Length: 320
Image (cartoon, rainbow, N blue to C red):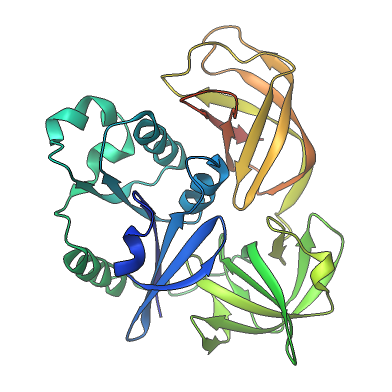
């Protein structure tokens, strides 16, 4: 069974004709099952009011559908978010008589420049994506231990605590003992479901529901990460070299409060140190977060500045 997760960035409810509506909060899930394969569509329900809604939808996805009704600051912000997140595979739907020539200078040099233009026909879009997920071949042997960032969780009578999330970084298996990062707690993985089907394991890209033993709902929070991997770490201090987007107008300064986005985490982060010598768009910085951020060393963290007006996506930080 293969799963493909697609961020649908456009008018609210556009994905309703692509799949069956599932969990809905600040992101709304739509699911489509074809044989043994599944498609998961995500919409940022509370964007543009809440930037985190857009970030969460994009960070969970491996592909995107960008629907353009009008050319606004929000359109530009979505393009920058997709580019910073590195979502290279996608479709673009132009509506209201918007032409490719009108958006060409706005997407030039970004991942969106290479998205496939498609007509506004959701049946055909769905058919193309079904073919794409059917072409995915499961790796012969995934040895690395994986991780599951938590996006939703709840108690189920007779089962215990159930966590929803998407596998990253490797493989998780039934009956593993998983660390609940950034806490010191652990939980036994009693069972794995992929779109309501039981499974013995799950690999990167799989959308899963995990039944856990040995932990309570009160011990969890969105953004926590379940993993048996010794490579996972967490810290309130993030060091590395940042890369600011080309539209960013001025250098970052010590004391600025950004928001660091990684997996299902979106946390305030104050600039504690910055070296702007050389190219100020590629500074060496140290961030201090209010809560521990969970990551693999070398991961990409997205930087946001919520007081940035029409552009709130500042760039990326490669964490040491």
